[in-house]
Length: 185
Image (cartoon, rainbow, N blue to C red; front, side, top):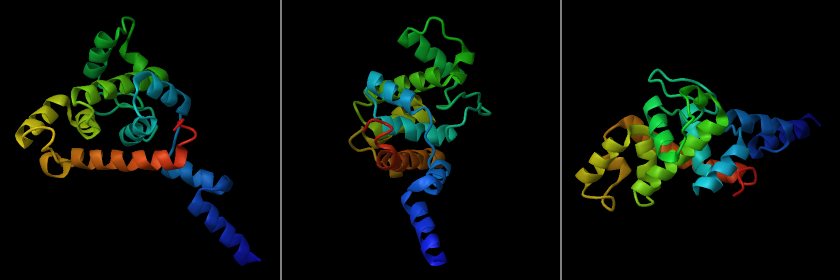
């Protein structure tokens, strides 16, 4: 009897089924604000799993401010937020707005779309630029001989950014697999 109960508990942990499995899933790969993520993914034509993966890598879905002043779930710097506000028509934007999940995710999704467009649909370059900055990535792409020659493992000189790109790509797949329904995928 005890073996059956333990077996069922282990199965729930592994598969993510039941209340225990849900709790483990929430701890290991949280998802909050899925309604906002779905809406912004649709509005900005960005994969909802990509937005969730960036949020996970940036903040683990915790509203916080970094030592560099990046704010909110998607860790947007004041300079980037001002750029987004100017380009997207956010005339009433104030820096404090970045603490609001709706605005933070909307700005982060807008910026991802901007970067994806800048890199002609290359999401790897866009994710690298989200982390290391567009100027750095533009320079790396040029050194690599263009976007078709660019290999993130070889051409990203920052270990943190290499790991960031890898982790976002990995988490994106996990969010697709585990939260496809919640993200509208």
